[in-house]
Image (tube, rainbow, N blue to C red; front, side):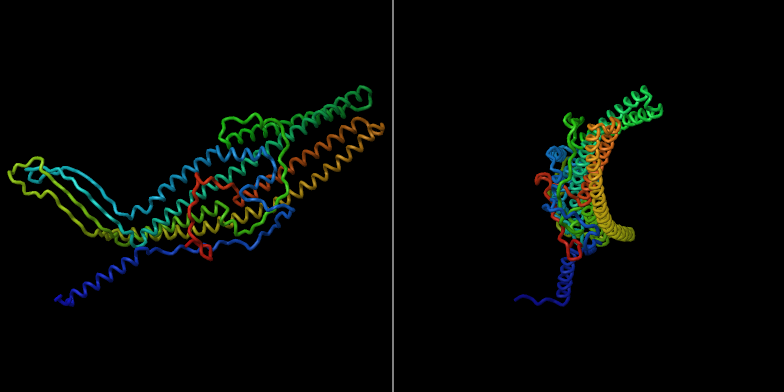
Length: 484
């Protein structure tokens, strides 16, 4: 017949159960993540383009230029750019560590051997054995490690996306700059030839005493200025070609780039989106959110250091005498041990508490940095939208001016054939039309660059291949935008 439990035994049993329940409850204890509450407006202040076109794909926005050479350049840059390759390798490194972050709280087994000498110097031993330990990850340690690892992984994903966004934008910018500079060089060459012809006509008129010497000097100065203006587009061509080579991971530009071609012209496009979409597309915001998660993990770990580290340990050691002066060995061959491991902070508890307070301040700073990243993203998009509207209007006005001067030049041609205008009038009319074409080319390029700036601010870039980025599983967000 079993004996009834004594009062003391019952009390110890209830105490053991209570401690076990508390330990289980504290196993996942970690401070809740802060609510980010991103300050995103309800709508854009500037109206977006309303062209009768399909919505522009954020992952292929440069196709609106309808330039096959540009599309090929972007593909080559994504495959060969060294900054993107570095970001890919860093992400792989972070992912490798992330996949093993949970191993810290799994049982560990170590095998070791060492020699030992008896304190009386009468014997020496060879010892071999196994040590096993298992840290339980209580008091929020496991959750803090998970947050820290996940934050580092999310930051790596955001950095890779940022590198791709910046790369695509830079390639499109340099290509627009290269082709625009080539067009400007051609127009300036035409203006230079016309200025030279005007100078030669003024010299002829001077010999016929139909023009004053000052008119000849002015014509010569105009021709010299037109020649000097050629230096700017030629320098821009060389610089853009070199930068494109670097973006593509090459040590020299392709010869085909230096052959003049038509600049890419922005076609019909439409933007369907809201400011709230920046939270998932803009890499700077994703990076700031990852920093919040990582800092929250660090805070959880420093907070857990205020409490005991609890685990289990076991060992098995075998020993054999190497040199024993006694005839009969009194040393057992094997010793086994098993029991809990508890590490309690005592005299350095104040330093640990200070570290926790410091991490709490860093977490609040990271939340503020997240809000700042959202505000900067919204402001950058709004600025790009406003600039895009202004540059679009500028291009329209410059096109109207160029068309008007083209019609005026055609009228001068007719008058010249009827001997109602002279050759100088014809040259001046042609120069005016070419200068208007220069202004139109610059306005068209500025319009395209504003479009590039908009989609860079939106975080537009092609999605990476699955083998280079297996996207991290982001923490689900609650209704306030804070990851849970």
